[in-house]
Image (cartoon, rainbow, N blue to C red):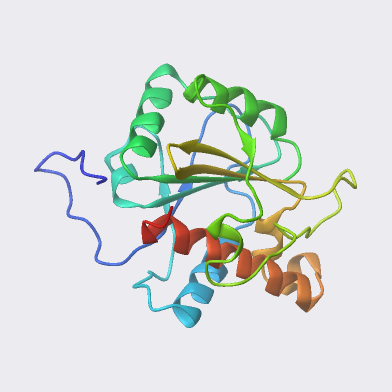
Length: 212
């Protein structure tokens, strides 16, 4: 489905991977550098998916966008999309792509503003606990795990649906990316590191499986 590329562009890679979104606005899109390699390692170990060793940095205006089935964005600061980026992101999601936005504490207001510009006709809603992302590989009967305290609010998973398909997942007050990082970074207990990885495995598997 993710086909828009010109014939002279570089060929697609054989392995599936995650695209780390490089966005404008001043937020630290590059936060948690060990998180995505660790999640990809978990996917290789725990699933049969042909997953690459490393993520790819992508923008919403580059051809590499169309090579990744799953875009991950995080940060502590401001997010801003240009009009062209808004158009491309909506097109990417309509044609089968998946966006996981992971608030690293500080991007909540700007992400909600920008995603509402992408889909003014599809507001974010809380994803029901019966959705496959909470049971596709690992069971999360109470929903997304809470990894870090932030404001002390409960962790929540919000999403945007196009028909029956979840195309945007927003992990709020959870901080999965911190949980995916090397254990020496945040010194999270093993059970939280494992819970974060399991939730990440569910999300990526959903994004590439065609499950609704």
